[in-house]
Structure formats: structure tokens, C-alpha cells
Amino acid sequence: MTEKKRSALMNFLFPKITLGYCVRLICVAAIAYGFFGYLCKPAIVRGASMEPAYHDGMFVFCWTPAFWRRKPSHGDVVMIRYGSDRVMLLKRVLAVEGDVIEFRDGVLYLNNEIAEGPWLNLTKCDWNMEPHTVSAGHIYVIGDNRSMPMDEHIFGEADLADVIGMPLLQ
Amino acid sequence: MKQIIIAIVIIAVAIVAWLLFFPSEKKIVLKQLDKIIESVNKPSDEGNIAAAAKNLAFGALLDDTNEISIIIDEFPYNGSHSSSELASLEAQGRLYCETIDIRLKGADVEIKDGVATINFTAAFTVVTKFGGKYDEIRPFVATLKKIDKKWKFTAFRDKQVLKK
Image (cartoon, rainbow over all chains, first blue to last red; front, top):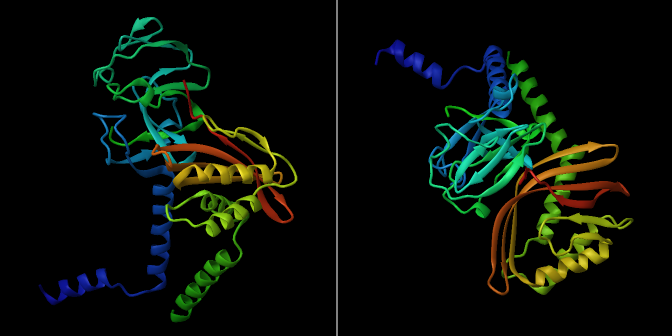
């Protein structure tokens, strides 16, 4: 390594603390805090309710601007506030406001017609659920892993105000 | 240059000291939540004196001027109770449990018109004396009022995030 390269490396690893360096450091810290604290929140998936798309222990980012200009629609994976902002539910939107959702022997019916989409039959399912009309300002969310018994699965109608964002790189 | 950096460091230390010694109302409210969770938690080796001290601490955190409302799904003590009644129920309930471990996963505080509302998510691990084990994460809402310059709990309810 030449003397010049070594000096550059030492300057990078141990920079001189100047006013400009302090200002840059504060700016970078503020931008990182804003970006990772509000726009792109890091999270770890816990549980198997979104298998096979999202595994237990998987690292994801919650992209909060995703629904600033549009509402969640069928097939979107959303992250929903679960009490506080630091705990979120990861679920897939299967119905939006006004839709009538129903399960008959594991087949999803939307507005009395068999629903279609690549996300619908990711696991085997034998659920039966009475028709339910989704209220205004709400979405109906369910995890992808419907091979587990219905009463062990957290699902239902969520308020749009509780939707924080969607995972990046779905 | 050196003086400017020293000045920045002094200002940063002063801000940290200020935040530590004069916490915001929100932090004081969160501290009350930590205290009530600590007073309910029960390690397996808890003695009678520690249990009594925790029960006293639990009662002191509740509003003793009004009834406290509890609306929690599948909870045996739902309804309105006085602080002493609730402290006694808490002591009874703890007797049935071998261990109670409540961990706060996240909490957001909002203070409006002298009422603090905490939206929080807690993870429970409860082992009963009869061998039953409950392990779950649930969201709750707690309400506090400032009484004699201290924040005291006035209501607890669970938050239904998904309605079936």
C-alpha cells in the first residue's frame, strides 16, 4: 500500500474532527433517524402466519409512504399497528370496503364469486366462514398460511388508520 | 475550532442531563406503566414479603378517587372496581399463578385534557399453579389521570385491532 493510500485510509477511519465533519455527522444521523424511524422501519417477522411468503425470523422493512397516495387493494401485503407502532401484524389484504368475503371449504369467495389471484392458494385450506361485508374505511386481512386451524389464526377487519405501510421487496 | 467542538459537546451533555433530570410527562406516564407491570410480574421464587410490597405498589398506582374500569376479553375481573378491591383481586389472582412474566413490547402515550392514554402491546407468559401455560401478545389501552401531582390508572381495556 502506498503512503498516499494509507493516509487516505487513515483519514477515512480516523477523520480529523472539524466543524464540517461534526455538521456532516449530525446531518447523516438526523437523516438516518428520520428514514429508518418513520419512512422505512426495520422489523423482524415472528410466527408462521405468512408462510410461505414470509418466514419466521425474516428481516423486513416497513415502507410507510406506500399508502400515502392510494388505499391498500386486493393482494397487497400490509403491516398493521398492533397496539403500539413498534409491534405490527403482517397480513394480506383479501377484501376491501364494501366487499363480501366468505370461505367455503377453503375456497375464498368475494362478492359471491370465486376469488382469483396468485396469493390465494399458497397453502392447503379447509376453512369455512360465513359471509362478512367489510365496513367503510376498513380492509379484511388474513395471513397466507391458512393450513393452520382457523381459531389459531389472527385475521379480520382492520381500520385503514391502523395500516402503517407495506413490507419492502414483497 | 477547538472551542466550537467543546461548546457542541457541552451543549449535548447539557441536553442529555436536562432530559434525564426533567423527564417529559410522557416519560413519567410510561414509568407508571413499567411500575404497574413490575408489580404484577411474579417470579417463581417470590416470597410473601415481596408479594405484599408489590401488592401495595400496585394499589398505589390506581386511582383511589373513582372506580377503575376494566374491559378485557376473557379476563375474569371485568367491570368497575375500587382501587382497594382491585388490589385485593390482583393479590388473589397472583396466588393462582406460579409465574407471571409481562414484557412491554411497545407503548405510545398521548396526553390530552389532563388524561393520558397509553396504547401498548404486551407479551404475557403465565404459568398457573395447576400447570396451565398461557403465552400470547396482545394490545391494550390504559388511561391515567393526574391526581395529587401523580399519574394514576383509571381504566384498562384491550384493543381490538382485527374484528372478525
